[in-house]
Length: 382
Figure (cartoon, rainbow, N blue to C red):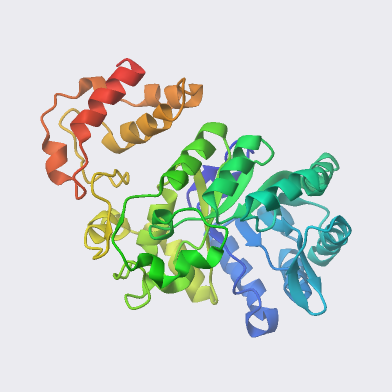
């Protein structure tokens, strides 16, 4: 298992994590089976958005004796009332719900306390001014949560939260179809097939800016909906009109700036192991670029997806990384120190490019790589 830094939190997380969708299977007996399989494979991160008390208690039992082996991302503002889930911004309900969750989970702290499901700017303002954010800060001061997170599907809302400096971790929906759509306060629009009926071109600029800003500010991204609820794995259901493999979906998400862990939903141990097998997959099995190039209604023409099909460079420049650092640098008036340091750490730099153009003959998307190398050499000075 490969481990990544979760932003500036200091946490090292497995790049494959667990979503909680399958925890309720077999009357919650599946929970322990999934945690056993996760521990055996080195998976150390899981998300628990559900407020179902039976699931929470099952997770608490599954963690018994091994709490320190797992990093828990659990949600604030997700409560259980009258036998069903409810998202609330009423502080009294939020406080009672969180304290109840600690008891059910048999723990006295949560590693990442995630403010649950914020997809509207006015809702973010309620969180800021209505006491929810202050409560999260109080929990952190008291040691009941170690880090403050937020879950969102809307890049404009997520960006506002990230730029506020209030959150350290962002749970966000990342996959190659959702990344094409503009921001919306209605999450249903992400999987509304009508939105994919026309011809879509390249990543939505708000989404790219969000990922790059998270990288710059040290906000770690944990990925939900990597498989689009399973739709991307089925040619008939996929908005792209072409089926992707689990390895391709995971690799795409892990290739985005700031992404640390993909929370793979699994309804069985076999499904979890399929996601974990990404760690043993070949470069060819992970490669998504050639499949992207076959999408009938979606074009990534001219857009670098950091797939490394341009390699190998005759001057041994890591073109994908140089391009990623160029994009991160160009979004700021001044180059962030961390970006400058990462660029400097590369063995070879853009200034060494001899403009031979061989890389461009390999790119599935017609990216003007030589122009990017010239810009990078100018931006970084070498």
